[in-house]
Image (tube, rainbow, N blue to C red; front, side, top):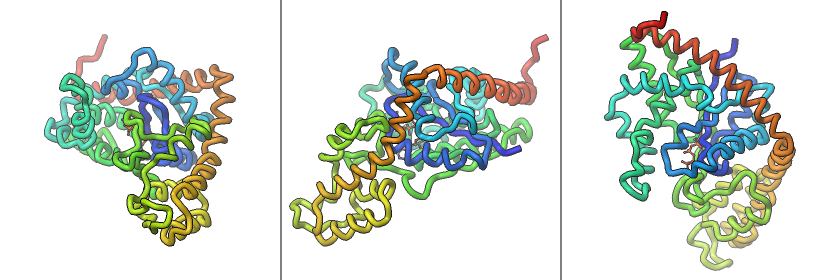
Length: 331
Ligand code: AQP
């Protein structure tokens, strides 16, 4: 039997190239090495302001995009978090072993609460988000969690929660390792300021068409030293060059790096090459997404099967947990 691998994605907006490079592309590479479980984490998406009328559709779209981007449903299980209620059940138990101090050190909580529009947006769910995430992973005793760089701290806390539970109640959970890609683990937004995020509107969506992508790449931040076409630049500090490293073949990377350093090409030329290579990756995903959109029942079937299988797996762990923590069994 292969060990379980778990990872999740929030239906909090359009899936973007940061999610693809930092997570989904890596998930696809790991499909055969593990028994993979992928989850659309809709309860997590409630922790930030969201449009109630869009959530169900966004959950479906997230599943569709992930399948189109390479999550072959024959080689993994894909399901919606709220379809397996044991996720929130185990999270409650983990709340009781997780120190508040550990949660208050989480960078994501600090960043998201700093940019909250008002105090009332900083809810307890945002604070305990990593506890629910630990529950997502440990419910399946997953041993591997492929994530982008921003999630490393949460996986460290997941291991800490597993240790805390095991120390109090006896050896129950393994300590999962994170798998972070060498390239693309932290994609910066097109504003060049913060991590590319669904909620920051600094992203390129996986399903955006060529025209819309070009409209976004046009004003995207480059090396500030290149004010005029004739100013030489430093590719290593340019966000567009870092995207070339994820989308362009080595010869194009070399060409744009040299052209930048010598002012042989301008930023617009460099962006045109990136645009072509990016669309070369996005268009096949978009074609598969369009085909799936025409057969929504295929996506529904995948999600149903995933929820059924995962509910069974989850119940096995919950029976063990309830017994370990001393709950009275129902007659
Ligand atoms: N910019 C990024 N670069 C590399 N990896 C990233 N991931 C997210 N942004 C980047 C990785 O994508 C997976 C799914 O992320 P998520 O949707 O669950 O959570 P998130 O990090 O909160 O995503 P966003 O886009 O930033 O959403 P919002 O704006 O809603 O908070 C994770 O493995 C993550 O590491």
